[in-house]
Length: 265
Image (cartoon, rainbow, N blue to C red; front, side, top):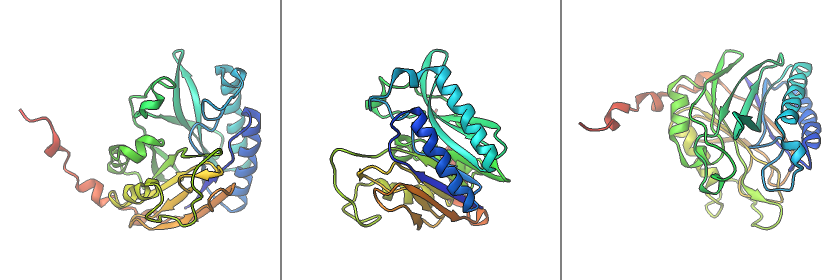
């Protein structure tokens, strides 16, 4: 299976984000990718960055999702598109999954919020497994994938061969210019990616924005914890890699004995 990760710049608006999404999906299609994942809260853009309130309405978010479905269908590429989404008049951080035929297969909510996000989103309460071209996968969003490994283990125990991890770490304003993937002086994020794959014996695919000062690169990690491909720091683009689902045995996740950690009587 060929998978792709997008590293777009921060969108200037919802229409700008859709234009970049279409460009990157076409690039992924040209490289024969079957699915592409975008970073966290890609549409309308990560909160607090000055986006128009019009871009954040439920009506315009629905129109944007409709457009993503059309782009997926036109290019025969499945798309994981993280969005802000209104449910029962509350705002959630979600990642929609759209098939290569343009069908909505569902969405994963961000269930473990960072403390700084408590006043932005409402946490979700459920986890989902998705399937594209006979390959099962899960999704964990940013903070919960980095700091709550249970979110990845759950997916691996349900038969996921890969967990996609849309996230946002870094800044366009200040920070350190990283030069070497996984360097011991780098922030811990890339090391966490390695662990999520290694501790579950599955693939882990993490997508980040191409900011001026990223804290991590978009990266694809194999079931042994090796980074098989990553984007250049600060570069907007699409990385594509083959993965072998047969290597993602999930054996370490499946050997985990949940009952040992049940509440004692």
